Length: 231
Figure 1 (cartoon, rainbow, N blue to C red):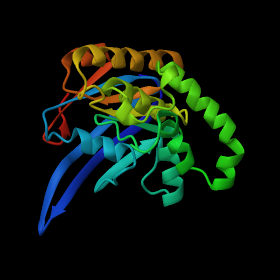
Figure 2 (figure 1 turned 45 degrees about the vertical axis):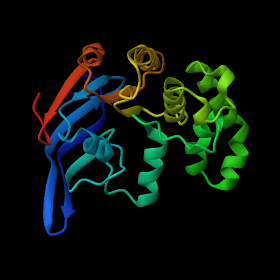
Figure 3 (figure 1 turned 30 degrees about the vertical axis):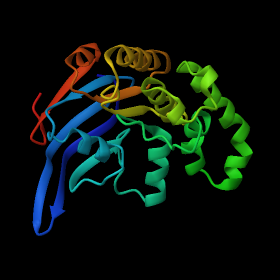
């Protein structure tokens, strides 16, 4: 395998419900290599989405470590951890998570606005605008820049979400059922786009999926059951 970009080492995660502690992850070890496409499979409740949240620095582990390029990340200062999340890790979700009041171009640029101070963003706004427009062209939405999510199809919304995930030039993208809300024909187009981005830009992907056909297209398959990696 190539050099590891993102790793989990003995990661556990539990949630408190009243006086009870509910374990979700029970000691997960995995590694995602540079430029690799990995499928993460398992039944509902296996812990896949929780693992993505921990790997993506959205949620801290209860124990264990997450490493980015060999460096433990959850002990970093909050600001540094947030910067790493915004700049190096992209997210694609099943239900898009687009802002309904913003058009496609504004949704793509949103992440860069959040990660920069006002003066920094104003200084770079033309470059960022050009980058966002290029990405919308890349995902096949050249004519849809000014359309809001309600004016886009499901496949088009997911393409906007993919462009948004790429805006900061991340090294890895975490995708949680990226085609789970799409019909089979649209899903096939979105998957072709993701694999093309992997080939052309070298971005690594970790994709949660229930689709065995998608898994067969990936470089490697990881299966989870009851909060642990079983294969």
